[in-house]
Image (cartoon, rainbow over all chains, first blue to last red):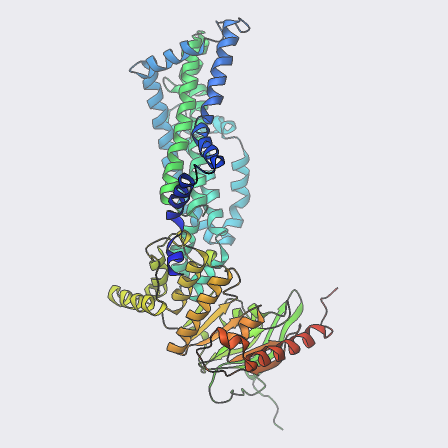
Amino acid sequence: MADSLTAGGASQPETSATVATAAAKPAPVIKKRRALPSFGKLLPFIGPIALFIIWDLVVRAGWIKAILLPTPAATLIALVNGLAGGPLLLDFLVTVMRTLEAFLIAAVVGVPLGVLLGSNERAYRSVEFLIDFFRSTPSSALIPLFLLIFGVSDINKVAIAAFGALLIVLFNSAYGVLNARKQRVMAAKVMGASRWQIFKDVLLWESLQPTFVGLRSAVSMALVIVIVAEMFIGSENGLGHKIIDAQQVLNVREMYAAILAAGALGYALNVVFIVIEKRIVHWSGR
Amino acid sequence: MSVVISPKLKHEEPVVPFVPGPPGTHITIRGLTKYFAGWPLYEDFNLDIPKGKIVSVFGPNGCGKSTLINMIAGLIPIDAGQILFDGKSLADTKIGYVFQNYREAMFPWLRTIDNIAYPLKLEGKSKVEINRRVEELVASFDVKFDLNRYPYEMSGGQQQTASIMRALAPGPEVLFLDEPFSALDFEMTLFIREKLQEVFMQTGTTMMLVSHDLEEAVYLADEILLLTKRPTKVAHILHYDDARPRTVETLTQPRFIDAKKMSLEIFQTEVRREATAQPPK
């Protein structure tokens, strides 16, 4: 019985793998099932490859004029050249910097404030409407307001992105605390934990996972607003500026290269956050 | 007859003088009242829980078995009444509590061993003391699995074993168990049941066990507390004093069967009885 107790969790995949290989000869059905995953790994590439093929066909067949849409190969070359020391690299880095600055402000202010509001339900209820209202307001609609306050400056772009991201972080952290598993709180209480101990030993940990969800959405939001701000608030650099600039002179290769760069940046930020989240909130989903 | 002069006296609640339980009483419950959604669950409920015994709580659905131990353990506030542990209040009493849902009772961000040590940390014990106590528990539970894993990496039975260890770590005066076996398979249930009995024989800790399985309730109990339908009263307190350790053989012995049969009869009488209270329309 004790042995059956020890075997569990981590060691299980190994055992099932050995069982599968051992049984492979008499039962080829199992072999087939094992062959599937290697093909499964390729599945994610099918979508992008299909998109590139269709894109290429559309341009080659002349359905869309080449002056409006370059071939994917030409776009990729422009992207790689631009990022490998070309002018696109500076725009890319500037956008990364602004996004990260805005995100950091949002996180440093939003997480503690959210956790604090969440641990005091009355306080949260009294500002809930404001948070929900401004969270629902497209931040880009507030650009004129921020222009009045900060003028046409670099700070303006970061400030408005930080504002939009802040509300998301705040909301998620607060709800993380508000929705902490009641039973864990009770367990701590029955063991004699004080209110402060319950807060730091249970509520804070319980809020980590929703907080990470908030941070991940916040960094995406920050990127969106930074790009929009770069497009419409006088700017000399950044991906948003680059896209608008290239569009004005119909340099479609560079325009699409900048769009792809923005997309890649957003995707990479998301992946980085998922990896960090899995490391820190290791119990999530289990 | 003297009239009440001071208005202050009016607010001093207990008009009924406090009646202590018989010798050997650990927990005295007097005038316990609890309303749920406007109708009474408990009304002027009195009970004495003996010291150093296992009391199984059994009764019809919705009679508030878990609510009773949750009120005693201070997890649910009471509307009126008094609950004392050896004459002390809950605040001055060390208790342990084992939840049915171990998954949501353990802290998944702590390793299992730190989960077990957590109540000791709350008490401000030194590292050496904590380690010594945890080793003691590991020895007495004869733990064969790796406590350095996280709770979610272990089986249900291992997690529930760990949560019982956590509840016992500070050496509580009373251990509450709310359907601790309901989420476990039969093999684990037997295993933990034996462990619990062993611990009880070693320590003599007063235990209150809520169970929905009559056999399990009788098997572990010194006293079976049978409750009525709402508003809940004590239907009967059945004594079952077979020697410990009780084993699988116990389950087929006439004394055990008699105790079980009697409990069942009382239970069925209570289930058939018309409810005396109806929810407000």
